[in-house]
Amino acid sequence: MRTILRIAAFFLTVCMAMTGITSVSWAQESNVAPAINQNFKSTELDVEGWATRFTGESREAFNARMDVLKALALKPGDRVADVGAGTGLYTRLFAQAVGLTGRVYSNDIAPKFLAYIAQSAAKDGLKNVETVLGGDRSTNLPDTSVDVIFHSDVYHHFEFPMTMNTDLRRALKTNGRLYVLELAKTGASASHVRAPKDVVIAEIEKSGFRLVEQVNVPGLRENYLLHFRKAGG
Ligand SMILES: C[S@@+](CC[C@H](N)C(=O)[O-])C[C@H]1O[C@@H](n2cnc3c(N)ncnc32)[C@H](O)[C@@H]1O
Image (cartoon, rainbow, N blue to C red; front, top):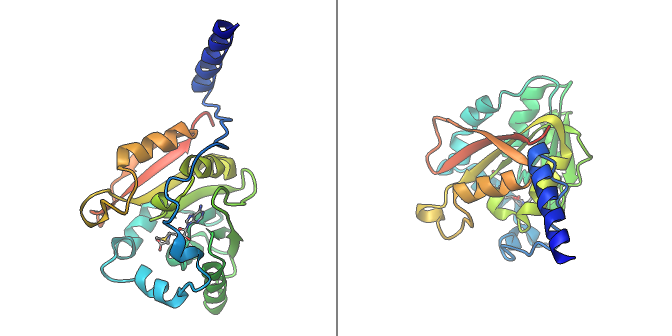
């Protein structure tokens, strides 16, 4: 009986790999970084302080933002999710790139960050920005609703990375693109960042994506930008 079950599981795995179908549930996934979002989850969250920090001249994700934006090749009308948007550094750039026919979903687990984004978008007249409160295991974005998902400096903040990757796949349209801007696990970031690039790629591919390329972005040295598509459409 056990042999039959093993053979059935083997064929199921082969079929899923061949078709790219990954209806895998990561319900049992344990928290890989329980304390990493402590600051962002605090009711004392200093939003202005983080806004200053996220837009600091010493921060590569800030300095290289225009090159990163260009690499994403967003078009007017695109629906883009900025997952783990923080104080909206990329949300604001995306809102201008996709125009009034497009939409930017600013997603985060910190309600105070989202309130700050909503307020600054209103002040800047960005009418195409919508905030979406997510949780540790889900963005809460609707199924197959976005053309592009982007996250910057967020992958190592996912406490349940496989569950989140699968959720991102769920929210992405069939031909949608996922871009991951992540800190390399080297130098000053070595202890803060959980996984090196090859592990990040392996985890995301295991969640139903295929790597298209590592995008060459001129201003990136401490970070890398990965472009994925949904495996199996
Ligand atoms: C280092 S900040 C980066 C902020 C912004 N992306 C930037 O580059 O300026 C990481 C962000 O990820 C958010 N975050 C952590 N886990 C998340 C999850 N499961 N879903 C959405 N956002 C998450 C945090 O609340 C925080 O705003």
